[in-house]
Image (cartoon, rainbow over all chains, first blue to last red; front, side, top):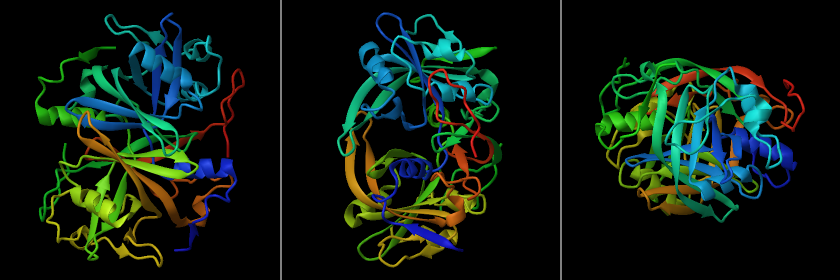
Length: 211
Length: 211
């Protein structure tokens, strides 16, 4: 295998480096984050740095870079406490990507992209109507990552909204059935094809395919 | 659309809840983490909670739950400082999954799964020879997430090893060409199919397909 080694990142062109490093961790989750401010001004932003933190309590983390966009999202989460994650699917990936543009604060990305702002009684942040899996979160904690001035935003899952048939008997959510897509780097969108589900791994026991 | 709402997570069966919450954030990156201890005892563990933290400096974060497995990985990273991330592809996903089994400390998951421990001069942790994209990291910081007793492990990228033709002119790494796969939940493995790459989003400018 003809391989190259990259050791000297500092001398790479900064945009080339950002593109390279953003794509090197592997495929990423793809969510639209819906927020609003105290006046009801809505905001929608695409995020690929979302990570499962734990199931009990049900917590989700997001990495935010406060000095870059999407600062409106961060400000809204901290001030207003509630926010939503909405899975991106192949029907809305272009609108989802467009939310990354730096619109002024008084512009709603729902309006400019045509995505539907959906309000659920009792939950104080906008969902994306076109998303087949919707998660309502309440802000729990902001941890500052001083090494590079980013923050880990931790949210407590308060509400899950999805079609019942996406959920299998054991609790597994069939993302492929929901049309959820994934991304690589900052701009490459991919659908998925299931290879297999594997049984719980135990030492010296052969694995089975499940479901 | 017939939707269900889940609000009451505490009353769900704990295994059902773990499966549900683990699959709800979307598709995830899939890496094998290679480490060794001071005696050269090697360890390999699959991780789907890896997140891009920033490109300058090039940093990668991983969520680790110290009270569960893979604690050998965490101990090795902190004691020995160097570790590797290795992309999982469709040829090795079963071996990768099997590394999640709770082997005793003196057992090398390389040996029991048959994956190749590859040593690169000047880098003091084992890579997975079968991985087409390999990342060498140096431990930078451990941040404890007290809300649920997990930790964010931050590593500085010191070395990237991959085929030259995976890297496009702008620095984008073509993960699909490299055979990198993704996962949903704890046990569902998926290959990908590219939909499109989209141009940088600007307000009120139409998006183009790129490359």
